[in-house]
Amino acid sequence: MKKCALVVGHKPESPGACNETHGICEFELNNELVDLIMSRLSSSVEPDGGIELVKVLRNTYRGLPSDINELNPDFVVSFHCNAFNKRASGTETLFYRSSMKGKKIAERFQENMTHILELPDRGIKGISVEDRGGHLLKYTNAPCVLVEPFFIDNDNDYRKYIANKLMFVQAIHRSLFEAADVV
Image (cartoon, rainbow, N blue to C red; front, side, top):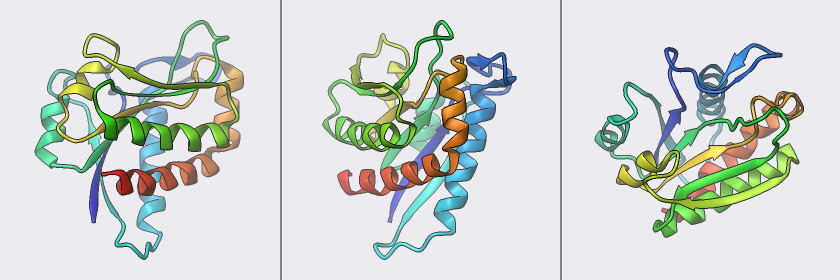
């Protein structure tokens, strides 16, 4: 059985980007999403032994990789949402540029998320430690990806996510099993 750490992006005191129209920020959305993913996985029976999921909430950004490494997961998925100018749209997945396993995992998540949300495919991006999210991606021992399924400040992106939320959770569920095959 593989172990996956599901990281809820941001924290209550620093909730990340928000959608002003719907009054929701990244932390609240991603906390609910991770709970839904964990609930869906725990209610399914997989013939190959399944995946153990561990929910990770951030204490400090700098300490997050150490907190995750103590759990000794086989792979890590950090959940976020993009934001820019209320018009930018799309789905992207980040991985550390030298991680070949991270790249393969990112490809699986990207394909499954874009299939369900049908937003512009912004692709997978190999990033360095200096880029946003780079600290987490570089300093976790296990392959790690950071998913940005949509732009939370774009009302159309947000509505598309809400309309497809349960199918999106299924797509993440599928991605987790595909990622487990990579590691």
